[in-house]
Image (cartoon, rainbow, N blue to C red; front, side):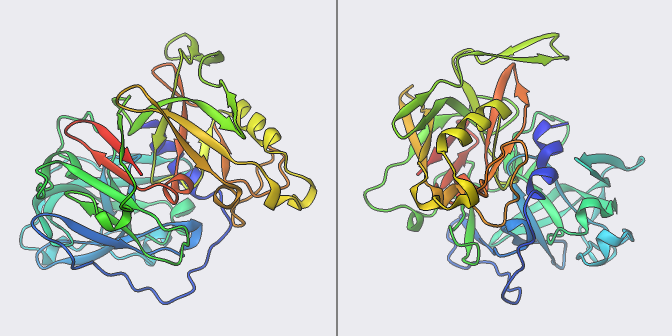
Length: 383
């Protein structure tokens, strides 16, 4: 099981309710050409989620999904799901789709999400991503969705965009999405700073309207076989370099029966399924202290900026800065471990991959920096 998948629901639930102020108005964009398709993402939902609409079946049935680079499966509720969590969700009815096929004939598979779980069977049908049609795509239909935590989730299902090593099952982003004018297997994600504005996910390329004429794309090699991750050198705060990635972290890894070491770099996972910035507990405690928040966060306007230092495809250091306006979010709960009087969008977690500690750069980061994911060359581009 993908370790990010198990943290997914826990992380996005760590915010106070964020109620959608306007009537739901999901739509698919129509400025698509030659295999490039952009789906509008609507914000303003509980837990600051950005949700888009896809269609499945013949004739098409519409579903609201959360696009998640930290998991690999596409799943939606089945018409046979009768839990409380399913009552408010759109459900897939295979009986009305002429292209439906049952792929898995044995018992449903259980998938766990932190405190919750689903039971899915694999089927195939046509999937529509804006103007792109994916024929005979395999996906999961959930006959059981636990009430905790999915009753509070305003999406119907999850659209996994993560890296997969499962050779038995074709995923959408890896195998089946038609290629656009660039002839590359690529998708890109834009999140607006204001959650009531529209975001966008583009399949088959990237949208130049999100790139200023004087901006360049920084390209990074994907450093993991499990995640959309890049090499992270360290942190910087007000010009001070924090060497958080070269020391022994002393985290006992039971599977490897040894301590994880940072070995000169950490890994920064670019994850659309996480609302916050997540990272090692000790590092975030140190960062919080150095940001110097005061009682009742009265010095909010004077708080320091900090940056993630990432290593690009040429081994050069690239700096990605976050300001107090980026990392303080009023809807986030104050984490008791960090003991901060400000609503920092930080989540202390201690997880490692290949004996390297992970940072997770979630929605807070992506609201500042446009991200491009290229599967063929295993690269990530940031603006």
